[in-house]
Length: 157
Image (cartoon, helix red, strand yellow):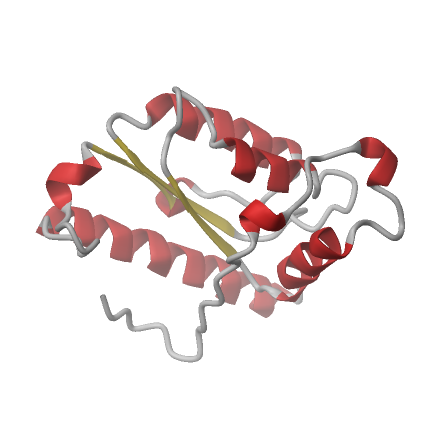
């Protein structure tokens, strides 16, 4: 999927499973290196796109764990965030994740939020989106995130 976002680069965080289980005793000025690397990537990002499944009607544990490591650091505070929850249903996990993102003061806008229910019927086995309406909605979410980031830059945040 090609998006018309000139100058926007996406950098994946691929070490979610490598973060240690959240422990407030380790949440100090010198947290574990994996946590510091995660926080550094967040600090360096102009915005964050979270794409997640719903798991057992909630947020997958590894994602919740990562977010827990950011509560004291404020790395999500006022950062533009787009959220796509793609699952069989997705509404409950999406709602739970939105509550967590609000607690950590992420900058959320309705047009950058999407639940894709019955995702398996909307994509091929190799992960390509096959449903044109779903692809259109994903584009709109990513463009909304880009606009949020541009607005932040324009306002000096």
